Amino acid sequence: MASKLLLIAVFVLDLIAFGLAVAAEQRRSTAKIVQDSEINYNYCVYDSDIATGYGVGAFLFLMASQALIMVASRCFCCGKALNPSGSRAWAVILFIVCWLFFLIAEICLLAGSARNAYHTKYRTIFSELPPSCETVRKGVFGAGAAFIFLTAIVNKFYYISYSNARENSFQPYGGGREAGVGMGAHK
Image 1 (cartoon, rainbow, N blue to C red):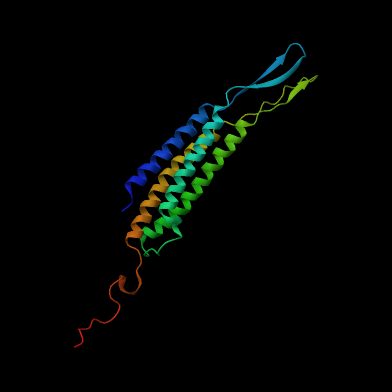
Image 2 (spheres, rainbow, N blue to C red):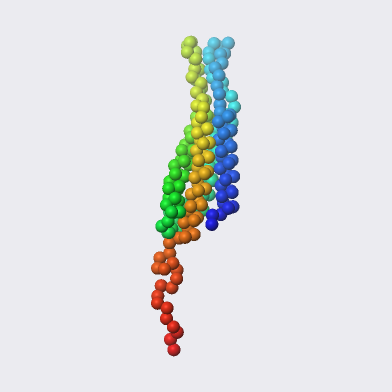
């Protein structure tokens, strides 16, 4: 039976990561071009940089959630062999999908956080073209949040499938029963 305490802990970590990713999407940096009247040059002014912290927080909470599931399931590769069954087949498929969604979510969060932290120091003097005030595209943190949600669903199904397959684990030579021929006591 899958540990309910572990599933609740992972759910809470995933929920916090999802909330932070959504908050990062809502609070990502915006920039505006400002002209200095004394020297007559244009430069970029950025607002709050809180989305970077939210993105990194979501990254870390999702990583903790994934690590907890992988430690509990021994990363699917360590421990005794699992009985060939439907639960094992689903556990293998969900293991691969879980890691795929996890990596996509982490890449979105890390790229969004890094891009949000980058502020252009470029300014124009004697030029009519405004500076390019680069910011994070809308939807980067949102994509991370979507993949956090998918990872949360898949890793719980993976852990439950793994637990079901582990309960019915493969035991060679008669499943732990006596391997030899039963004999009476010798007198």
